[in-house]
Image (cartoon, rainbow, N blue to C red; front, side, top):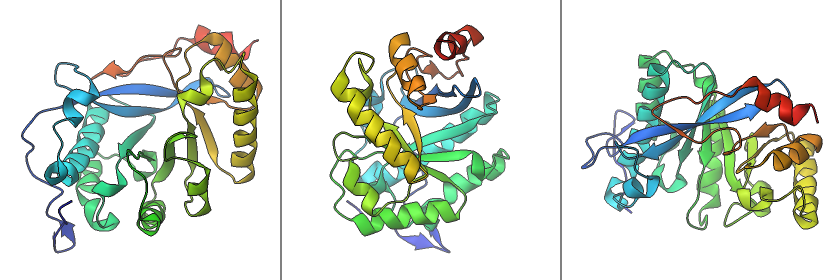
Length: 257
């Protein structure tokens, strides 16, 4: 992977044109305890709504830093244009952050340009590869916390986003992967795993989000067992260049049970 270089504290590999265009979709993360949308997650899409893979497959090592920053900027600008009033959650790849304070400058400029408060930004750590430099990842999380951002550990419980990361990282939130959530209302093993994870998270003062909630039964089980923040198709599919809303009847169907 190519290294960044800096001029006056700013990353020179983080800005510039990409050889392809892309857009964003937004999926709500709901807070059932207050029956509201807590945040929207920004998800990469093609300019005509093509899948994330259609874009990500074009990103090589030379474009990684620039693409990571372009996604952040596009997400903030589009969220502002759409009139988003909730928080905004943005994915980032740790390998695309060379030096946190330098590589964040394009993001800060975009937030300032549209008057987006930094405490309304959540960065989700996504890892497609094993974390080989734990100190670097810990440094990113600590720097982001100091700058006023919240940090979530995405896809928790599968792949490389596992329990051992919490020995060194201090995120604000854990996002439970959908593999733990699917059929949880009828799967006793998943119930034990999630209940134990939630108990641990709350003991460590970490928030919990259940990803991949697709049925009313899954939503009701999670809510009954203390998981009040949900994300998934049961509530809304990602809205291409739009902000899906949640009907009050959906909240009531879950919480009134």
